[in-house]
Amino acid sequence: MASYHEKGSDNDSQVPANSGYVLDSRRRAALAEVDNAKFSWFHAKVCIVAGVGFFTDAYDIFAINIASTMLGYVYGKSQKLNKQQDLGVKVATPVGTLCGQLLFGWLADVLGRKKMYGVELMIIIVATFAQALSGNAPAVHIIGVLIVWRFIMGIGIGGDYPLSAVISSEFAATKIRGRMMTAVFASQGWGNFTASLVAFIITSAYKKSILAESSVTDLRSVDFMWRLLIGLGAVPGVIALYFRLTIPETPRFTMDIERNLDQATADVQAVLAGRKAQVDEDAFIQRIDAPKASWADFRAHFGQLHNFKILFGTAYSWFALDIAFYGLGLNSAIILQAIGFGNAKSTGVRAVYDNLHNVCVGNLILSAAGLIPGYWVTFLFIDKWGRKPIQLMGFIMLTIIFVILGFGYDKLTSTPGNTKAFVFLYCLANFFQNFGPNTTTFVIPGEIFPTRYRSTAHGISAASGKLGAIVAQVGFSQLKDIGGTNKFVKHILEIFAFFMLTGIGSTLLLPETMGKSLEELSNEDQQDFVKGTTTKPIVSIAA
Image 1 (cartoon, rainbow, N blue to C red):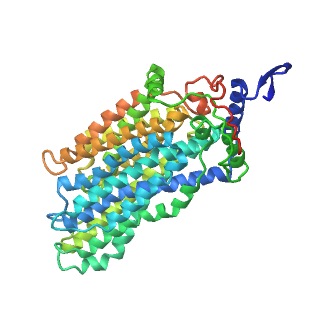
Image 2 (image 1 turned 60 degrees about the horizontal axis):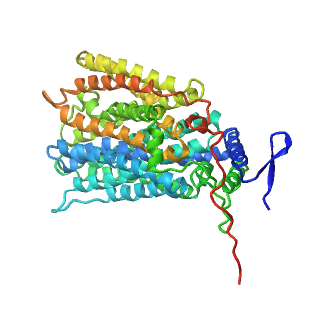
Image 3 (image 1 turned 30 degrees about the vertical axis):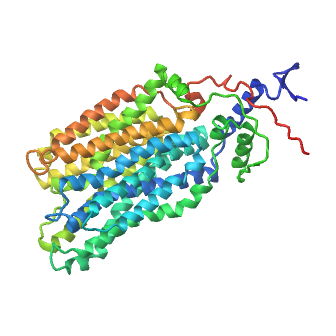
């Protein structure tokens, strides 16, 4: 016999429990519990588990900035990698990341956030260890081996972007969603800083060994150094792996993609009560009739102008931002040397130590003075000011700063006093990248799309960013020496200013997401989202 629930306040108006109205109401009630939940240890755990992954990602990406200098001393001609080798080790990871973002973004919407979470971290761990253990051989140069493993590592890093963004957004309460996602992404700053700090410690520890080397053509100590620097990047990933594999599935995926409302409701209750969600494998699953992901549905949804312009806005904003973010981040050692900041005046093996020491110190200054503060200022204001104002302000300030750095480059680098002004403006650019579009381009795509396409669309947006990183790295490598060593750097900074200007335009395409539920932001009617059920109970007859 069918059970009935009352509709409204009229006792005579009754509807079946499996009707669209009742199921729709149950869905909205369950989502409201998640959206209105108070901050708890579970929310903190999500931030920590996701954040450790981003810490590892940033460490592994930006450690190559210093490691490539070490590799040049050991395996390069004239104590540095040639243009193609330097480009290869730096661009391999962004290329892999682009592939991973698209692949894992799609898989997380098809197979589930939980099933994919941890897989990408295992790829990172294996590829990182493999880099540290790579060797040279007559048939294959070690730089080629490193390029392959850094590409594979990039696939794992790419998977972390949509998965961490979507998991943190789908578990977060509406009022704290921006801060939760920013806290996760801010771990990138600490990863960048730690890579420079570890490089500094390793360089100091091997000082005596470097100075004891017979000549600059036989720097065995430096070979130990870069392997330690890269290999230690796997340690935080190993620590976080267990927690990633045991994190529960998000209720929104269970509800809207698996269409299992009963299990999702039970999961919400368990998570909010601090209990482990239980899954009864033998229980009958009643699937709700809700929009289902398909290529036809994807085209229909994003074929609407207001939905397409949002996807284009998130994708292009990330592309424009990463042109400058990775153009600077992967080449800060080159830029510091180009402006004469900390260049060693010594010769021989002493110059090797001094240059490595100065590169490490310079990167520590850039990270501590610009990158880290920018993330945490965003953390303070993102749920007060909103995402769009912060992104717009960031692009405007970056346009101004890069115009000054580019067109004033010659004057700013002419004397030691002016060089300090250049470094200050460089740190300011790092600050407004993170108190600006570098953070918001991660947050907004994790909020603004329907659940069934949230991870896929975030992956598309993030992959657009990595396309910008690839364009920046290839362009930087090919252009910087036009007219002489590092002579074209000033014009590259001017090009960065142009892309920051275009980012202002793409930001204007985006709506504000602060204070709205994920369902409100999806541009879909939530009142009639559930039509009813799609299956009937199966009666088993025992012999």
